[in-house]
Length: 336
Ligand SMILES: [Zn+2]
Image (cartoon, rainbow, N blue to C red):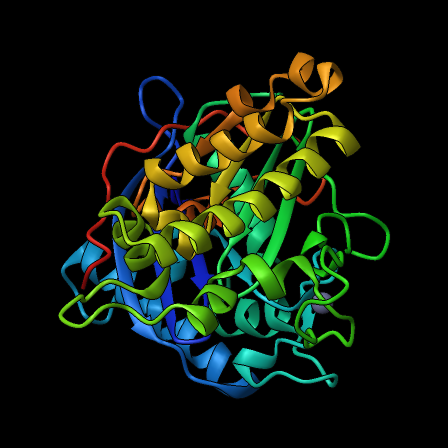
């Protein structure tokens, strides 16, 4: 039995696969190899891409193109968007992957093909576990606020994922925050994700000419450079993200809210803007000031593949059990 675990982060355009070693001298985990492929769509395409990524990982580890994943990994964890039935390893309604209401028994199909145990988790939940592990939070209460195409939170309480009986825990992107806001894909108006996600930013901010940054990062750079339109939009988005942070802290009283997802590639300036907004919102409230929310905010380090790492860790611990306390040593090059 191999001592390596494989973790996959399957997105609408790319699949990132990492090999994680959990048998270091200190018992902590580290990423030892990584592979990135374009995602094939539809149920067949998703299974094929996952299998190809795992074969490529095994080939890189061994130097043998014919290497078998089941010779190299003791288990596989997958983080994937959509409605995930973690207990049965099934996904449905992963619109960006071409998986509809008919669903895909991903764990079963991939497991049979590669002769390996496979666990499947919602990608934001997997990232929450990966972020908790990366920050070495142990059995702390934390929330991971993913700000990407959409907005959702992964909630980890006492070191364990809180999924909820309908897998809807943390789906705060569809909490309406502006009754006059844009119509959301979910049918409501002014949802948090329709005003503060990466897509919401892209709808209102076009990267400046000559900038190769995505709209979210370009917006923050333009605001930093003093552009008044950018500053105003940045502060508006930060205000909504501060409201999301306050919501999470007041609902489950987490020690830490970690900002992640594509928009968090902005890094420290994002944390700073949201912390400022939290402080502004607490100005007139001794109650809020006492909670010191701005000090409980963190941001995932850029290019840290927390969803893939969290997924790999889930392959060691079946759904519902507590997370280990790993440490990533090697940061894979995600620019390829
Ligand atoms: Zn919505």
